[in-house]
Image 1 (spheres, one colour):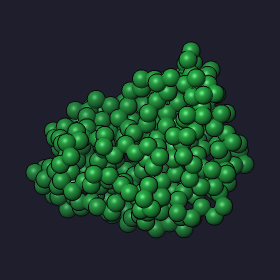
Image 2: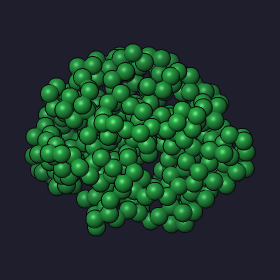
Image 3: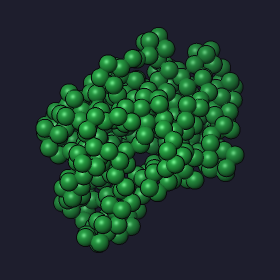
Image 4: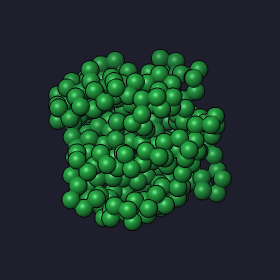
Length: 322
């Protein structure tokens, strides 16, 4: 399934809900407006879309939100995707607040991998950036995920200049003793990230990678995955470190992703409010119309963003599925 630029698309990110139990400053407003519950796709509807998408060439899906674990009965959806769709991999991104409770159920349902957002290892900073979060709760969730076999675990850390950039080495050092992948993410100019009210700002992570390479001797590392990260490791270390650099080292030319929002839109690019509304076709169970909509989204997918040239994206990140 190729777009007009020849990019092969095999990866679908599925937002199952736009609500969240945190309000991270770069992601969601404190008083967010959410979709009407009647607009949110049912599990039956999501499964139908994925079945059509796999017929077109999608092989992997990632469950996102909002916070996906606040969606009631999420393991049921994982099980249905595993047993009713021709997928090679099902993964999930979570803030980790409910992970200790649901890790085993998710694993038993068929979830292959999980990514957990941990921007800081300092409890006070964690609560500050998330507004309501508990680092201790998330760490318990990480340990539970490892215990039930959701490994190798990936930790996502948005690095903000002047807020948590002094923890880069601490996060890297997790890979020296544990089989964990720590991924550093550049701040993207989307929604709430445009005004962080003194909680830091954009940091060029390509320069950080070069600095870490000089200091720790990083070498390229192979890593299974379908996302935009480029992976490295300290020689001899069990873990890996990834860099997601949408501004300092763009990866648009190799993008393989489409997004299904919780209210039934197919979004071909995170940076633009360009989408195809499939909700009516989905609710009619019109598979031909769903397939046509997915192909239309591919046809209108832009070559890439222009964040590096000052473009900004007004849509709130939590409604896009990240």
